[in-house]
Amino acid sequence: MTTAEPASTTAQQDDKRRWWILAAVTFSLFLIMLDNTVVTVALPALQTGVNASLAQLEWFIDAYSLMFAVLLLSGGKLADYVGRRRIFAFGLVVFTLASLWCALSTSGGELIAARGAQGAGAALMLPATISIIAEAFSGVERGLAFGIWAAVSGVSSSPSRSSPSRVTPQRTNTWISSG
Image 1 (cartoon, one colour):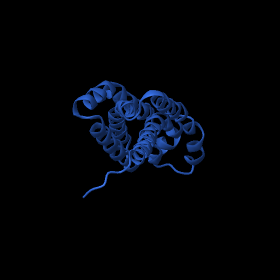
Image 2 (tube, helix red, strand yellow):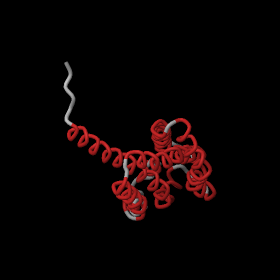
Image 3 (cartoon, helix red, strand yellow):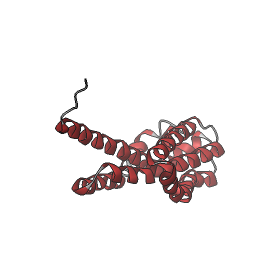
Image 4 (spheres, one colour):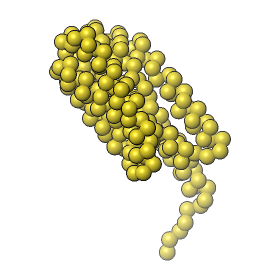
């Protein structure tokens, strides 16, 4: 004989789960947006760390932005066809592995390729975060959830303007571009 949980307990569990989902997707958004800007602060350290030319320094930023922009719409369409959670998870794996690749890069060309891979992973994750939030929340809570998501998007570039610049002169490796 099985006993069913009271409806209020199930509703509370679903409510907690929704907010944990929001925390996960907004944290990924934070990383996506931060990684788009943080490399700018680290360019002098990256130049010496991987012996990069001026053109390569430009591509450290451009590779991420270009791949992100080119694949963003495709990432959304893939999330519609394959499934938002599956594409989000795949994008997260790509982004994480590319971040590790950035950290281990020893040349400018390798770092450019790794940054492009990061942008591709970000392009898969970002549209999926929007549809995951839309699925998890409804009514007034949906507006609140999207407000939190948007606030995180705006705030996420702020640390890149101050924190890494304090660290990069002492550390000339590519760790800063690893997200």
